[in-house]
Image 1 (cartoon, helix red, strand yellow):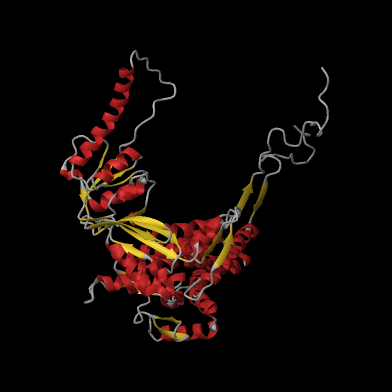
Image 2: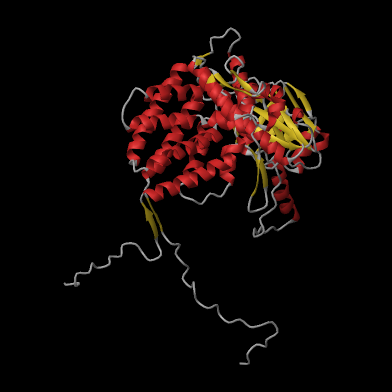
Length: 551
């Protein structure tokens, strides 16, 4: 077939598809990621500011937690979403360093722009970055100190790591109070799996932050109760606790049920049978010797009054999470029948009480012998404040958990970044070719952490970075930004400690995200498919008051 020296047009993608590729596309993706980085930069460090986010349903959130901010920002750019993903991964894996990892990834991308504009292949840059990050991780493992052998023991290490994690949070001024609470919470968990989901956090508006409580067991909000509840005792010493998944309520006959009876006595027998069934269950529960009866299902007014007459406390409709944590704390097991309940099925605790906290009543199980769980009751003036306290404690809990599993720590405050930066610069001078420039760029990118810490605190970042470079060149490997002296100082001796795992994870994630963006040089965006009757005129409607057409 002859086209007369003209090339035929071959349509592969459907009309309306946006396809852009080449060097310009990589730089465009990098610019999108840098825009995300610029949003998070002011929140870094102890003197970083908070961001107020108003969602589409007008819910306000005040936070400086990187993962929370990125989750609430509705990021639509496909490349920028990688930063959101690494921030979430850092939050899930380590708990802290979510802002650092995003800022680091953005800076690594920013450093690649001059190389791309000069025509260096993105694959050469990726190779250099991979080499640099492997050297950096090796250096962190070499520098990290195992401080678990200190004479003051494990707790001191955990408290210092928790304090560092809280330094950039809203609760920094109350750190002495919350550090003890966080370490107690983590140490109450089972050392084998350290499942932080077993730390229950209840938020109670009102009061001051320091009115928050740590319960070495379980606390949950008073459940819905019937008349007769007021007569039940609200305090027990060493009670026996029975956990059920049984409904203790008189059930109304089904609406469509039909029962034919000949005599009034027959009807009475049916009613008596229903009562006898529930009374048998209640007698079986009483015979177990339980002082407290909890059930996932409702406990009706008859059962409530029955228990009140016999000085037994009951709570129905207990949430599944709360019930699971009660079992882990007091022992025993959930029973799905009231027959054949043995003593080993009952749990116990040192003290049970129902107390008023703020405007709510809470059931507290304290001093649990098998406690592998605990509860934090958080107070605060506003809901946004309590929500931010909860996020701050989550980060600190995760850090303490990691420090307990992995005893290696490094100094924070930009100290470890400056030391690795110096190490990589020295290494880059020992090699030739383009890799020298790329590893040197990686080293320069690491300085963004101490630089941003200084800028957020209002210090002269150029002067302090020069002092840090000088100190590290003289072998002061733990020198970082000292916020109290507004200068530089030995952060290790000041106990600004972070688990080495946080830094290793952040460097690996940031480098992987950068290499992912560099490896994408074409974006194909399909046009949204239109609905079946898009573009059609709407059917004509009758105006208000128009008469119906006559038949």
